[in-house]
Length: 47
Length: 457
Image (cartoon, rainbow over all chains, first blue to last red; front, side, top):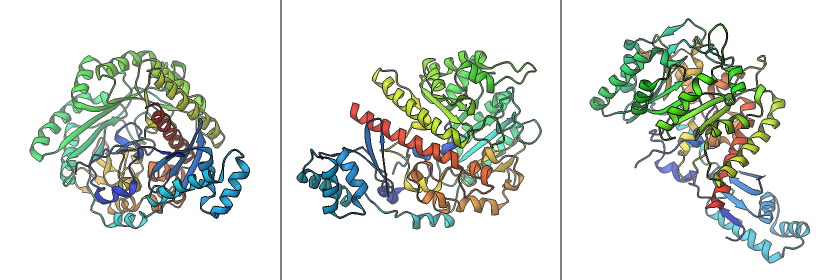
């Protein structure tokens, strides 16, 4: 496209199908302990 | 739902419900602002007036690109997730993470500590091996089919009870084999008691280690004195040890983690100071405290802090170009491999998947609720006995919070921290408003950095 550059992003809608396995890290176990930082966690769904 | 903003020369459009992010030129940026409430003819007229050098053909071409993204489900998408959020109420929950309060005692006297020098509104106390063992057994028993289990050794200062940490790790490793589980142990420490033996142990057993330091010496020492009578500053004691930890872990799987307050609104200097010390994994976060504390972040501080986040974001891009890059935890965002929408709706899992355990074995929804007895969930002997409290947390999600519904950042913070909401409103289904303002700014900065990185590639 000439006017728009889309960043390499996973469409959230696609994660409805196989999401919710719960194997990902709990956000407060990483560094924060005082905020909610879900957006920077990584998906660990291996299926 | 669209959020569009300009930052550091980039025109950024976030399609909130798909999470897709577009970097656009000026003409498209304006068209997107007009698109939903204007006819194509009106858009052409308006844009031609504003941009004299553009042509009708170019405007129609831009509209065509926008329509293409809309048809692909990447722009102007609807929120289709709310019905799925209702499923949360009926889901069966498992416990997958524990915050073990190994020591309700501390050798520091940090002025902003929510644990009140480690005591959490109670007496000084150390967790026994027996209690810790029961906590790990409870976790294994309550974890269903989940393979990865997380245990954070927290305090107070957990190294004041290090033998129990070591013994529990040994016990956990034995149980992994028996139950086909994987423990990810983590440690949060102020660093004073770190020595070579502990560092060696931590490097072998801890998948992450959080090292508490606020930044510049004068800033750190003002808020993080030792708990001795003189209130000696801690900086000189901990920095050499933290440098050693970071290097011995090859600059990965750790964070130096600080808190900024009303007293250091120029906190980007603290972040850069930590980077200049050689640290590559840095987290410096706003203090969360009630307005009566003189160090609390106020509403008037918000624009100052937002400008500081902008300054830090630009500085990080500069440093990346110079080959001196570092990670800043609150600007980290995983666009291509981030969490699924279920996780983004349900939040941190406090009170359901994630629990805190006191030294004497009581269970609370998270470390920040410890000591608030109305939120006592049960104990390591009997498990969860207060199902009413657990039910409250189970039902709490993005869509139970009115303020979140119209917020563009909702799928990044997933409704925010329940403990912060409770602290400011006495209700876990509200939000901590200052925190929300800062979160929105951080999401904007994080996305802008991604846009800049994409340009560099």
